[in-house]
Structures are given as structure tokens and as C-alpha cells.
Length: 381
Image (spheres, one colour):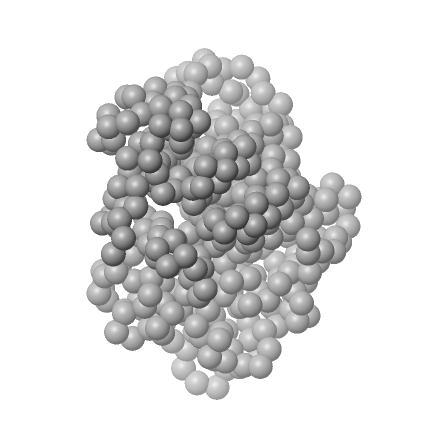
């Protein structure tokens, strides 16, 4: 097994999750990190020897095989391009970029120069999400999928005093709830079903048009209680409802919320087929419900001895031992470095730069639909 040396750029909540997951692989060393804010203290807290305040210094001074980019998406294009120009593989957090043009340029450069680039749509690595994909491929649902519904619901921005850099559209782009969490949902759905959304109708709502921005730094999902504030106008959505039309004629519907009290990080996917249906709720992430009309329904529990081979690929523990959010990162990165070792993404099942471009196309159409209040056709680029 080849050993890889990597750098992680950005040490917020997600950057730290990357470091932890990479260390669980065994064949990847996190040699250095970069962060413009307290980089040395952050590196020391996780036992990384080399710390840089600049991503360019990290790339220029370290002998790396790849970088993981975990910074605000307004910076993704310049960092990823700089890394690829230095011959490095790239694992990029989502949202992929802030525009279709940026996404297309990254894809074209990577493909022209034979560079493997991944996008961290790690949630497709949930074992029961992969089980759904395998069951669809086997034909369990019948000869046609009629409808897909669900959503992605959180509460971490419920109050007007809740703050994150994602609330600043200069850093996050023109959408928030959809680009941040809705893109996860549609990525999982398209990957599971093999269908492509071809039209969207979206509605946005901003619950807090003025938020209280803390004077200081606040980490994602942390509390800003007791801080001093300034008023900050918000122009991205707290809630997003979307109708989809898929290329086989199926209709889809999903709600994305960052303001639903009590829902910390819930993803739901319902798929209705001509012979059976599937239901998955990540609050019970190791279970998959299978519905039938003329026989008993089933609840399938994650067990590598019972699930389909595709799902078994992303399971590390025996039945009865739950796997969750951190494990999806580990599985995504394991498959990414397997692809890097063999210099091929054939059958890798991971989200690649082309999937990131697809994400930005859908994201742009959802935004246009909400602004223009009409159905928008999704055109491939």
C-alpha cells in the first residue's frame, strides 16, 4: 500500500474532521496545515508539526502528494488551481466553487493534466445510501421510479444571533441553504437512482434579514452567546423548497432548512418505484426501510454480512456497531487515495470534479428559479 503525504488547508470544523479521518486510514500522513488564523496553535492542538498562515507557503515548502481544501468556497478556485499547477491531487470541500465558470475551469485543468480531483460529498458514503443504490441497480424498485422526496434539515442558524462565514454571500456565494446542504441531498439522490434532474422550481425564504454578527471569530455550529454584535444584512436563504423533474419523468420534492428547531442534521430520502419504495433517515442512519404493497415491509439493518457488495465497500465495522458522519469522511478519503494509488477513478464511487461542476449547474438553476419564480431547465455544460 502506497503511503501519501498531504496538507490540509483551513482548520475550522470541517478541516479538523478531514485531519481526523485521514489519520484513521493508516497510509496517509498529515504533514502540514495552513490557516490564516492562529495556525500554529491549531496545528499544535492536533499534533501537526508544520503550520503555515498561507496556503502558498504550505504548497511551496512541503513535499506533498495532495491537499485537502477546507476553506470558504470563495477561495476554492484559486487554492485548487495553485495546487494543481504544482502537480498535486486535490480533495475539495463543497460547495465546489462560487460559479459555473470556476467549476468548469477546474475540471478542464484537472482532466487536461491528468490530475485526480475529488469533492467531499461524503454523505453518499453512508452504508445504507450505498445499499439503496445497489437495490435500485438490482431492479428491486421495479421498472420505473415515480417520485423522490425528502430534504436536509438543521437548526444551527435558528436565532438571529447565530453566525457563520456562510452567512456572508461574498464568501459563500449567492445561495446558502441549498448550496451548503441541498447539494448533498441532490448528489445522493442522483447517485442512488442514476437519474438526472432536468428542471427545477424553487422558493427561498430568509427568516432573519438582519443578523447579529459577533465582533470576533465564531466556529461553525458553535454558540456566539455573550459576544458583542454588529448588524449584518443577509441576502442568502435560511429555507429552500424545491420541486425537481427528472429525466425519466419522475417528480421530486425537497426542503432544505437551517432554521428548524431540534433538527441538528437530518437527511431524509424517499424513493417510490413501481414495485417497491425506499426510505432512509440519517437520524437512524444504519437502518433502511423497504416498502411493498403485497407483502411485508422490511427494515434492513447495516450488516456487512447481509448487505449488497456495493454497500459492503463502505463498511468498516460488524453488524450492531453503528457507523455515522465521521466514517463517511474516512470512506470517501480511502477510496480517493485508492484511486490516486492506481491513477484511475474507474468505479471509485467517490464524488469527482465533474460532480462538483454538476453541483454548481444545479445550484445556479435553483437560484435562478427562486429569483425569477419559474421553472428553470437544467442544461449540461
